[in-house]
Every structure is written in structure tokens, then in C-alpha cells.
Image (cartoon, rainbow, N blue to C red; front, side, top):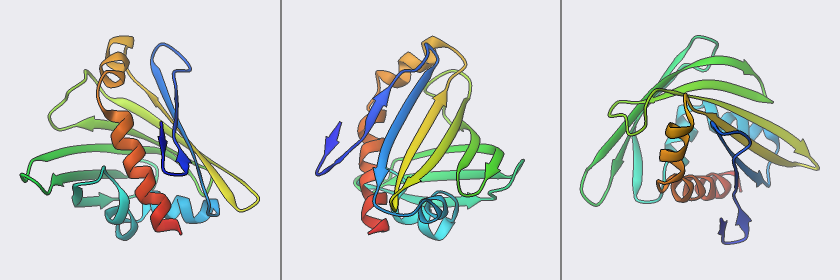
Length: 159
């Protein structure tokens, strides 16, 4: 999916995974901070038209997080939580994801890798679902559009 001058690439490395890749014009330490600091997360995390109304983050192994997004148009809410499994600053984050009102079965494990070359950071988030059916439900949703919008907001913040 192309948005403006930036591009989000979506691939399916296995029958249970979705990989999202995006290049940001910023050092990976800045990108890592934007993924783990509540004061930065509230400025970009979520698609346009949604705000991060609750952002509780404890970015350490076995630390928990909770996000609640609120849509400005009608006040609808969507919430999720998870636990950080591994953190290697500034190159990798591994955490679980489970929605309060699940729209796919089970939980996902997200591994986010950050690789820097020439001051630009390639972010690759690999989402691993409990089943192919769960992955396919996510692929059939508008997740890619929402992720692209959120990453566009992140790119704006990093400028």
C-alpha cells in the first residue's frame, strides 16, 4: 500500500504470519522510543480519526501494556492489551496482543525488528497468529489501511 511518498509493504511469510515493513527517515533509537514511550505513542498510534485515550506501557520483559483507542466521530472504542516478552533496545521488541473484544481467535505474538542504514530505519513487524484462520480474518479486515495510516503519523512525528 502506498501512502503519499512512503510505502507500507505487507507480506505473508507463513500461513500464520503477516509481516509489515516500512522505512522511516530517522535513527532507530528514535523509532524505538516512539514504539515504547507513552508520550510519543499517544501522538501517532492508531489510524487517522482515532486517538489513543488510554496508553499504559511498561516496556520490559514481562511488563504489560494496554491501549484504548477512541474514534472522534462517534466515540466508539477499541481496546487491547499484551505483555512484552523480549526487548533488545534499540533493535527488537516482542510482545503479545489480545483485544478486549476479540475479532480474531486467540492472541498474536508481534516481533518488531528495527534495522538502521544511513540514518534511515527499516521497521519490520511480524504478527504471528494462533492459526491460519485467525491470520486470514486479519488479512480480510482493514488492518493494512489502519497500519498504513498509523505509520504515516509516525513518519510525521519523526520528522
